[in-house]
Image 1: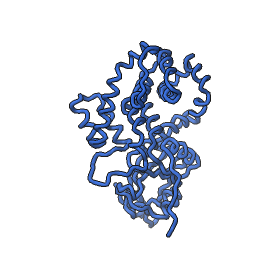
Image 2: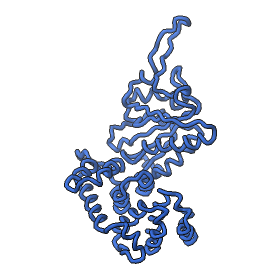
Image 3: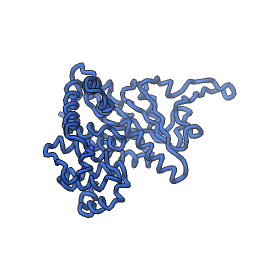
Image 4: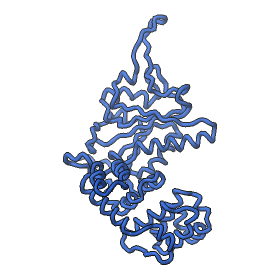
Length: 353
């Protein structure tokens, strides 16, 4: 009996660092992971970061072209043959969707999303493009690189086994759901703090070992559906739970709504800022996550002294959570005297972050 295959799995933020290093060597990369954990989003974010860095080097930016192989036929990839009457040979009309340097820029990512849901014939048509950067008469521009993403067959996401020949043409990175990585992204992108706090408090709900629905559930919890549900946090109470449930399912929606009620029962965060030395310090973990995440979202240079006064009444772990989130949203908070004093006293934490 063959030994089980063991693969190294990494959170999405670690995957981003690895992808950028592989891209620097112009290696084609395939991201694997369950639906909704951020594979497509992280690819778009990588392009943004590379674009900023490249413009500082030579003034050129990075572009992104998404090519959904599962919506195409092989002819869409190779092109349409036509007769060259002058030479007496058949040539191929190159698909307009593929990157062209004169139109799409010197650098970029050709993103083959959901690659292994494409037909076997379509995957076979991409062999040459992935390995040799050519496809018939077409050549991928030198500054462009291929990144693909897909789900494992076991995830029951319409995926099929990728041909060995195609697999061997990629560098493979296996991504797992990770609350800390999602929370970093969520804080930067102003996702409702109630949802960030809930994810941290109930992180086991997002554990990668939890399987996808085995029944006919249409709405279930992933980071993608959770983020969409967060857009309805300010809806009237009589609609809120049902709107959450439309994305994450009834059980999770009920739990999220209960957490939001707890969050709101803590009183005004502005009251904590106004009275940082006397405001109540919660003892329940759920309340601690809620207060820390909310205060971090509220922090400005104007009120940071008061927030730090309150933070110093918390345990080390909660202090770090609050201050990390606040400074990630606004890096200028690190220029304050309050942050400098905290950083000196917590050098071991600052070095690890």
